[in-house]
Image (tube, rainbow over all chains, first blue to last red; front, side, top):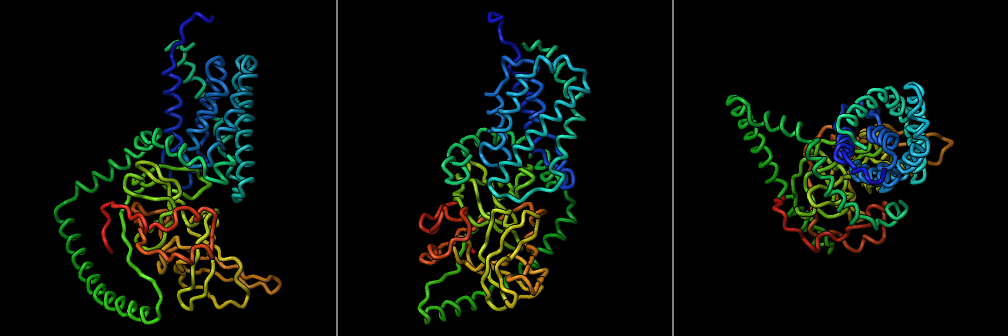
Length: 162
Length: 281
């Protein structure tokens, strides 16, 4: 196991870069609050598929990059993404066996946890409480999960990421 | 997080990381800037001629106004000299373009394509063609983040243009809406009043238009009136921003009035005038 060479690091990196690009892509004003949490979905997938490579460290790093990219408080996303990565890593063996709809529900829960932590941080620094639309991205992310999962799985098999 | 929020110790880290993610911003901005480039370059001769004509007329009108303004300014300075007050309106501006990326939807901020390499400093005022837009919050090498005046963390010292009533305009977090808290019920303010920057706090140059009061609600039971104002700047539509260097800030008033924690940094900008190809106004 330890002797097998690590392959496909570029694929993982590239999927994260695409997710980050989608995060700052300009959208019309009405669609902005519906933007799914792309980077979280990608992180959950990789933490589930190859937990020995993508874990809390990668989650934290992604979070810091997201913070800088979107201009939030440094560490706001890092905190929540580290937690998400940790939970996914703990659950990865169970998650892999779940049927896709059950997986989606678990993902919904994880996405909600991320949003909750974000709300908590926003409350602590006394930003105004956002409207109910704040909770829309996790739902959209859940609906997107099957597709993201299939696309990333095919990518992983094609490039034999281990 | 606490360090970043309270003391801004992590500015260096943030600006280093920003330099690393700068390519991502450029890639995202690429389609928009390409479209802009094409629309600029592929216009008919006719349109160009019309536009040139229009601009020439506008220029003429503005020049005429400028003449009057110069005379008025000179007179104003003379009068102020008589009163022995040091006060100058001589600003230097630099035009920057907004980079088309979406930042955090729950904060009002934008990214511009000029950074520390153009001499931008922390807390620098940013205007658009109509009015005050905001101030620089993070400076990176090639980009800078601008906090809009409507962000919930922003406070701007203003006065009512009609009678000089001073107050502070707070952002509400909604686009193009400001709130004026702590004005008593009997304050002389009404819908339609123009708010201009008062220059207190030393951060913004005085006299720039900010917003127009839209509604004044006076509840007899409440000590303060609820006053809302609409920004004059088109925060959601403008593609260009003007960065202003105030050449002689009002030092001395700085310590007395502090409007928001974000505005504490980067004071006395006139002392190290950056040489950044700006034009004298």
